[in-house]
Each structure stands twice: as C-alpha cells, then as structure tokens.
Length: 298
Image (cartoon, rainbow, N blue to C red; front, side, top):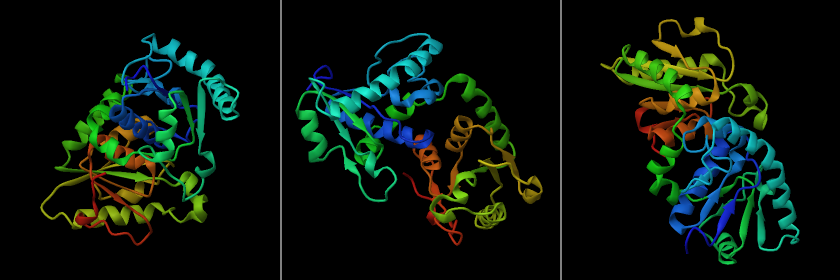
C-alpha cells in the first residue's frame, strides 16, 4: 500500500508528555512498516518542543503535512484538534462516510487492555481503506519502535531553545566525573497514584545514589537530578550532583544524555531511556536494587 491510500489520524490526547511520545512512537514505527500516512495533531501543546513536529500543524509522519511558521502551527493545532476529536467521535457512530474510529479509551486507566498495532483488530481497520481515527493511548508496536528508533528519535530531537541550555548543563556535569547518572524523582502525583505505591521520599533516592557510587569503585560518578517537586538540597551534600533543567522537556532531554538513568515506573524516564539509548533501572518499590545488572536497555 502507498502512504496515499490510508491515513491514520490520532484523535484523542493520551495524558501528559511521556504517554503522548510513546503513543506517537508506536504509530510511527508501525506506519514505517506498513506504509500508511500518520497525522498526529494530538501532540498538541508539546508539538512545538520537537524539530519534527514544531512546524507542522498536523504533525505528519513520515512526510510532513505542511511546513509553516511554528507559532502559526501551534495556533492551528489549538484550533483544529477539538474538531478532529469530534470527527473521531462522529466516525465512531458511523455517520462519517469514509472514516472509522478504533476507540480503546476504556483501557487507559486499567492495567489490562492493549491493542497490538500488528494484530487483527487494527489490521482489519487498515484493510478497510478508510480514514482511521484511533482514540486512546494503549496501542503498541514494540518491534516497530525498536526497529525504527533512530528515525523516531530524530523526529523528536528537541528544538534549539530546549536543546542548547540542556546540553550546556550536561557538558558541565561531564567535567565533574566520568559516569553520568540521571535521577528521575517523581513525587508530585505519585503521592496518591495507586495509593502511593511508587512514591519514595527524597532520602530514599539519596540512598540509591550512594549505592550507585559504591557499586562503581574507581569511577567518578556524578548525578543529574530531575525532580517534579522542589527538593531539600542539603540532603545531597557530599554527592556530586547538579539540578536538572527544571521543566519537563528539558529534564527529559537531560536524562536522555546521561550514561544511566534511575527512576520509578514512568513513561517519562522510559522515554528518556528509549530516545537516548540509555540503560534504565526502574525503581519498582522502595527495596529496589540499583546494582549494575538491573540497568536495562529499552
């Protein structure tokens, strides 16, 4: 099939930055494998942060839909997306000729429920030849995002105003040591999410940092600490560390430029690991081990 035969346009937003990046990546890898055109205006307010999407109102991939001024592209997305979302709802009701919706939003807040983009359900929708309007974020194509990581990562290269100060910070950190470890401290919403199962006090993160230093004798370990909350800096005394940029896109890029990452279960640190090809140790509970063998690639 050619990319002119079928268009897939994502018509619902999938949570915050990390979720939307993975939603996009799964469809992008799948689009490259299957040859359809992807339009992803659901990147919305985050689209202006990345080289591949900043100038395109509908965030087309693999080919750009339109190349316009970034500010105008932002305004277009803000205006167009509510109508695209309504189009998805209308197509779900069967009242839009030539369009169909696959809506899995009922799975968004559940552990189970995942639509494989290489599976029968999605395949039948593609075979219909209609404009396809997916809604929900739990779509996946793990093989596709691994196969096409370089192209997807290139699309999501941060724009210069984000990239430049972050890379200066990382350069400074690398003068302080020879092993750079990114620390993702997510406390904010994790205090209550799932009854706080993945919420850890700052002191516990500091313990993990000390354990990493101890497990790398002969290395000069330095940390870049990216946190959702303001931290008590006195807790980090004696540990070579720098504060992250302090805003989501900057923290994400900083983590992706480290040699290793630790953090609780989150699409945020998982994306940094994927984008930068950086081993990640997921801190699934307060007793998690940060031994070297627990740092894994995506």
